[in-house]
Length: 167
Picture 1 (spheres, rainbow, N blue to C red):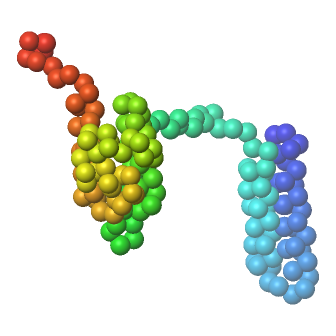
Picture 2 (cartoon, rainbow, N blue to C red):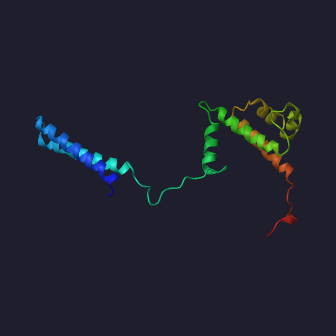
Picture 3 (cartoon, rainbow, N blue to C red):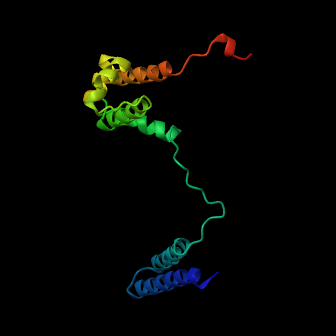
């Protein structure tokens, strides 16, 4: 053991022994004095384990948070539900950020008044109104907006025919 590891053990043992002896001199029974001394030694050992400790042999590496991973989806799910069943503000912000990213592929800006007519034409009146005015309050509104955004991407990508499929 190194000096950095033995110093807390020695300090705890000394403190425990002095405390136990002092309590015994003051009239506490010898069993309680020994228990106090052992407690001091245990505290010193615990202190040595935490102070100046080395990293474990198999240290856990921090996970890189990637978009779409399980923890990301859990955060989205928790942000959707407010206290009284309505969609929370954090959930609305996430939905609007998702809509901004999807609409950016079509060179549209959710906050630009000049793009509102094209957004309404692509997403439909109810989904566009919910996204532009931030009036998403229920899970049904979220589903409606997500369905509209998914069909937006499906309409942009040409469908594959049976002749292109393998197998």
